[in-house]
Image (cartoon, rainbow, N blue to C red; front, side):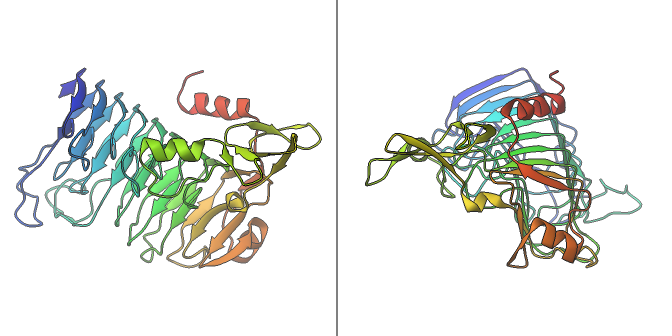
Length: 364
């Protein structure tokens, strides 16, 4: 167990694991297992080694990462190099200011490029390449700076259960390169303009090994500033979070919870453009896009199943990208059967968003 430590001003990562296998075979059990990492305070690490983390896991399984505080890191706070064995639990952690010197990554990042044979999921009588499901729950995660999703499930990451988290300044659910058998549910995602992935962005699935996106609340477009993917340095983030002046001397206030032109509070961190001292509210069209999927038809055996979700966009004109074609929310729902029981609306009042966050994190 690693309990109640303070890690700071370290040239490399704070903590890491590395087990031993016979090529792809992990049945010898010579890997870190059942490690507990709890109530640690981790910040300002990776001063020299940028591909580093607060917790870096390779060839290990059944890890409990609980109630840790992590901030000011050049790359991910928690990185799973592989899913050997699986069965990890990440719960109750507070993470912000990760990916300060990199992009195409997340505060929690996973890769799954190499399958390993183990006894973890089904026991010794049934060795399998399928890892036991890793659970990520009840975390409060800011994906600011160069972070994309709160949990960046990259490179075929599979067998994840991501539920009851609050993700701020984050894209929602991601799956690529053949990832499968994961579930993203009961999360609150507050999306600031970044790289257009927004509430979800998933590739094609293996037949009958699809992912689920269920009962989530996604507040999409809660600020006007567009930050390019990979904008990881503090200088870059400050630049794109400041007031950007145009040639006419007007600008865009990047953080103003706005009112519409009639003075009615629309509860949105909307684009507030100032022109000759007159305030005008407008919307970034890309923030009306709630998600993208390679296959939306729920009758197809390789389509992500999305249902019972709530979506909020600046103008309440939610749209979905299906197989590179753009559909309105209602068109996609009618044609493909996606998003059964889901709803969409204009952006909510900020007090409502705070209430939802407190409820998820049991802070009431």
